[in-house]
Length: 112
Length: 115
Image (cartoon, rainbow over all chains, first blue to last red; front, top):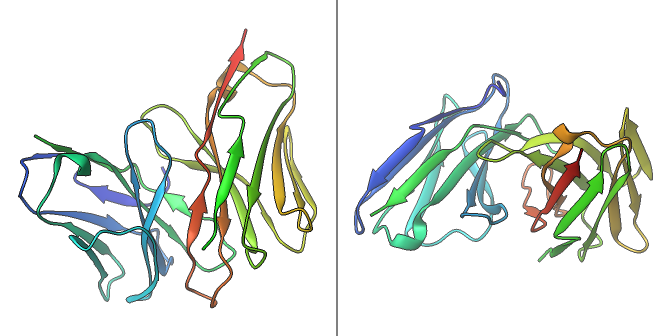
């Protein structure tokens, strides 16, 4: 158990819909990262938050947005969903810059 | 921005042999390089990491070496075991402000350890 909690574990929805993925970081970790992993693909960095503020942005689509709340949990919002958005979405957290990231178990999103 | 290449994409070794996976990065300001192991359907797990001010780090059967001049770093696994079979990802943290960190991952290496 990494200490990073992601909900839900699985999500099935249709094209055009909107979903929210939730992440609770490890106790004490201020940084939260979101990644997308498509089938048999690598990890694509989406966005990072530190203590409530956006700090780094990767290949995140405009249809996607995220935020980190005062209690440090984070949500990733995906809207106008397309078939190609089907993937495993991971959240990771770390205390700071040279500390390793610990990943949650991911949310598997399936678009029908 | 940072670009990370990883080779080979697949690697098969006999149990007990060594395995080496190599990564190169493009941004000379990158300063932290973790390696992750991902088993099928599971989350990536950190196995070892190295900072840019260190040339080598070892943890039991696993070691990582970093050559900042050449901008490459390598993962070495000795005495491989079947449970080492997984996909391994290298990553590089782009240089930036203290808490803004874009991590770029390599495409992964699928390691198979044959009994």
